Length: 564
Image 1 (cartoon, rainbow, N blue to C red):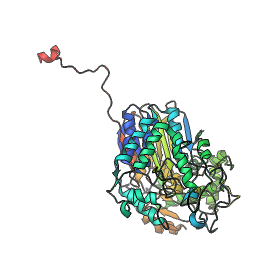
Image 2 (cartoon, helix red, strand yellow):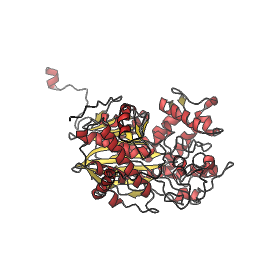
Image 3 (cartoon, rainbow, N blue to C red):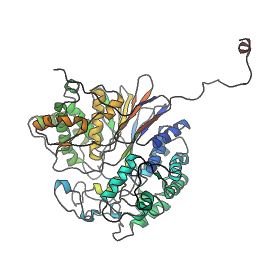
Image 4 (cartoon, helix red, strand yellow):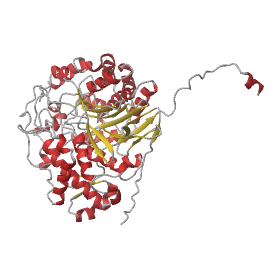
């Protein structure tokens, strides 16, 4: 039976270029990266400038006191992961938080929400030093130049988008009690939260960026900005002295090798643990490779049910094995093997899917960029301050919003994800790069917490199995499940009755995950960038270039022109 066609309605337009391309979840950030490419920089320069600018124009999602991952494919075809995830401070303790319930829905909550809002929620940041490390290893332009677009937008201001204003309102609704005065001074001038169209100026943060332009990551890791952070954490009625200046100076990003999986002739590269995606995207793809997804069609209940079952089975392993591999044994080779995929499918067929024991909690509030240059350097990078506006306070005089990454640790001692000094937080970030016959094919990623890697996996299916163009692939409706129910985006709401008939509990949602952006590489040497409707994503490409060699301009008229 021929599947019914499903038309993906897109709201944005892709960009195709040859000189380089930047996709990011804010137009000013994408433009900052393109500015670096136009100035002679490479994809790493563009990526760092884009990320620094996002700390200004998307402050609810990312900051210099956050963490994340950068996945690089170098022109020689090699890959490396720069892991800058946050970690627990040296004085952190497994008993530092008091859990309030063992119920799955409230498993990670603590008394006073101390692991979520305020000073005790802050873990050792890694973002800024990861960006500086990436630049030191592979950048071309001076680091100070990469900071200038961010300084410009912080000092001059920019117009707040609906996305930013909505996130601010959500954050203020979430906070119980008085809003941090420094935070309110910037984001609630005159006592009124910023609206769409208001101009946001961040002069304190501009001065911090000036210092970063001068000193690099040392401004935070060993300098005045780090000192101000640690002093602020030690203040207040509930001080958090578990993060020290030594933690900042001792922190170092890890340079890791990616995990390689395969799917229908494509190589799929992703980050290793403590990231989940490099393990569990191949695990899901291995299971799905045994089905004719193209023949099933895109928009039907049978496909959605299959995806939900595969995700649920994968999350059972994610819960069991996720974590920092220095503290938790993660059997990577077994999990990404086809033999194990077939074992998982046999369990599903037998009606024993090994559902997760509890829901994994991870913030949905993140940002992602994808960058490529004309020389074959590719950067796929995902960074965050964890929750919306991180720990929801600001370091006075700096404009810096710290992360609330301690929210990701299990607040109970003796668990795989318990707080241990130096332990990296687990993450669902999925900065992936696909190749075909050794050549780049697709680079992509997105925000969205635990919804990230299953959503990015679906974009891969959209391109490879369903033959979508890139814009359709990133904007297409998604499904998601980690065991409790199956979530459907609006374009799939009509599938609910059929899915319920198959035994699913269905939850209709506005969106699954966040704004995906991607670059696809074509055989003619061009690259195509696309961003989806779920964020302020924008693609900026260099389609022109310099004059041809030997061309010059002169006021003289040659003889042929004169004769004409």
